[in-house]
Image (tube, rainbow, N blue to C red; front, side):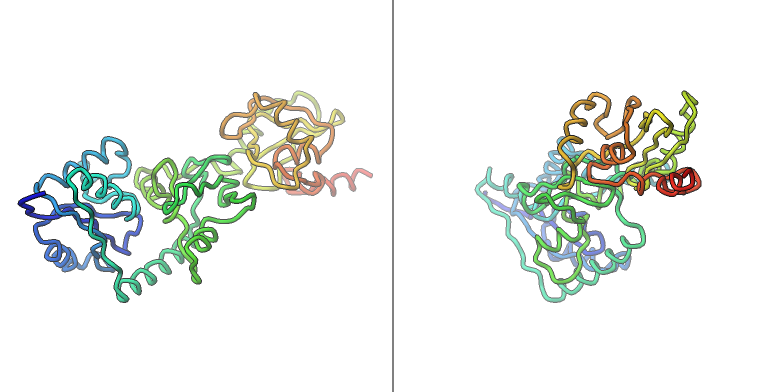
Length: 343
C-alpha cells in the first residue's frame, strides 16, 4: 500500500473492558493523548493495535462491515430522544485485530500490536477488581438476559471452548458445573479473580456487553421464580382435591398437584434442560418420552402425572433428588413434614 496517510486504530480502556474503540487518525499517539485529557473516564485509553491505511474512510468501511453482520455490537445510546452512535464496539480486542488483519491482508498490510505497559497492567487489575466487586452486588443472570439452560456460550480467546448453560448462574464445562468467573480464571491462568462475563460470548456478543445493552433498553429482566409459580397457581383449576406443592430450587420454578392419584406436574413449570451425573437413566428416557411437552426454554406445555414425589423432583431437576425434601406447600412446609403430620 503506497502513500499511507494514517492508521486505523484499536484502543482499549479498563473503564469499559467489554468495548473497544475503532477509529482513524493521522497520528494515533496524538489521538490517544486527546482522549486521555478527558476526566470522564477513570482510566486511560491505550493503543492495542494499528493498521496503516491510505484512506481516511477506511475505518468507516470497517464500521459498516461490522454493522452489516453484527449491528448489536455497536455502542448506541438514546440522548434526548435521538440515537447517538459511537465508535465503540462490544467485542474483545483480539476480535477487533482479526478484523483489521482480514482487511489488511487484502492490501498486504499487517496490524501492529502493542505490548501492555506495567502501568496499564496495574490499571487493568484495579478496574477488574472494581468490576468484580460490582458484579458481586448484582450477579450476572443468564435468565435475565434471555439465555436458558442448554444454550451455549463461547470463550473469546478460543472458539473451540464451548460451555453449556446449566442454571441461572452456572455453566457446564467438561461435564462439571462451574461459574463463568471460575472457568475464566482457570483458562487465563490467573491467581486473582476475574470478571467472567468479559471472556464469554453469546451469539457473538460479550456477556457483559449484552447485559449492559439489555439494561439500557430496559430488557434485563425476566419473571422471577415466584412470579412463575404464582402464574402456575393462578392457572391451576381445581381438577381434583389436593395440595399444590412447589419445587424447593428457585432456579427451577415448578409446581405439582398432590393427591391420592400421585403427583401431577403442572403446565408452566420450568424443567432443567441438562442432566447431572447423578441422574438415573430411566429419568432420561422419561424426558425423551415427554420431549414434545417441553419447549426449547424448558417450560412444560402440558400436565404430566407421576407416582412418586422423587420421580417428579428428578424429572424437574435432571438430577437425583429425594422428593420429600424438595417439595413444599405454600407456607414453606416440606413434604416430609406434611407426611409426618398425616401419620
